[in-house]
Amino acid sequence: MEETREINALLHLIDDPDEEVFGVVSNRIIDFGKGIIPNLENLWENTVSEDVQGRIELLIHRLHYRDLTDEIEQWSRNIHHDLLTGALLVARFQYPDLGTAQVYQDIEKLRRNIWLELNTYLTPLEQVNVLTSILYNYFNIKGTEVAYQAPEEFLINKQLESKRGNAIANGILYLVLSELLDIPVRAINIPKQFVLSYFKSDYDFSKHTENFMYKSEFFIDPISGQVFTHKDVETYFKRINVPPVTSYFKPLSNKRIIQVLLEEFSKCFTEEKDQYKRKELLALASLLDE
Image 1 (tube, one colour):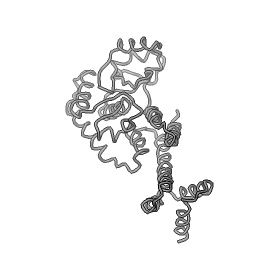
Image 2 (cartoon, one colour):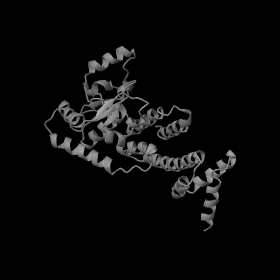
Image 3 (cartoon, one colour):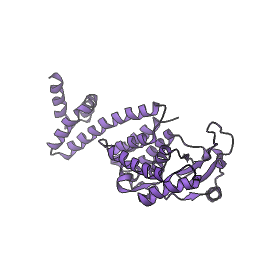
Image 4 (cartoon, rainbow, N blue to C red):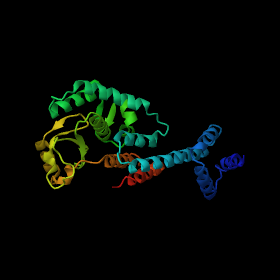
């Protein structure tokens, strides 16, 4: 009863013109956790002031963001950093009430269709051709260059729904399917690109002294699924006038991939009114520092 009275009092103060008062009220509302969101939504529906509605929307966002921060911290602490779980957490920044059932159904449908075409006698290139054919031809997913004017192309739920994703989103989907099917494809750190690599079966991830580039059978562009040779990659490095040092060919951890996704996604929010989203995404990315 006492708590209900306090909540009602706080809700009445949301429209206080004094920013300092509103700051104190906001922090106290956030302390109540997500359970207070229905009260805020009801207040929003019964408010005519757009400014007050904006304040309520920001409070609801802060409540979801606090929960998301906790979940990303927990994901970071796990021994196994499941890539699909990480991608879904990023999607929940924009879609906090995201239901994951459809995403898992789409992934399982893709996995099963690829699995039915695989067998132990296929060469590495044939394995990848099967995965690529199902993903880009049967499922008909389209790939685009990274464009910060298209934030939805970063998010796995919208990517599967629209069948359109950028190089990072498509690369993550490709990696998720590869892991489910035991195909040794990993992301690597080539400058200005998100590139995948099929590593040789005798690759030892604990060794960092040899030339990683030549532990790869070939490279894959996740925009289209096109395969590149070592010579193609060497030509690219010559074109950008950068030496192909070993660190560029070291496999990225799943933590680092999700960190890249958060960092790149943050660049979509350039307008003054969206600066808080950019800062929040970068703060989430910093939680994944290795």
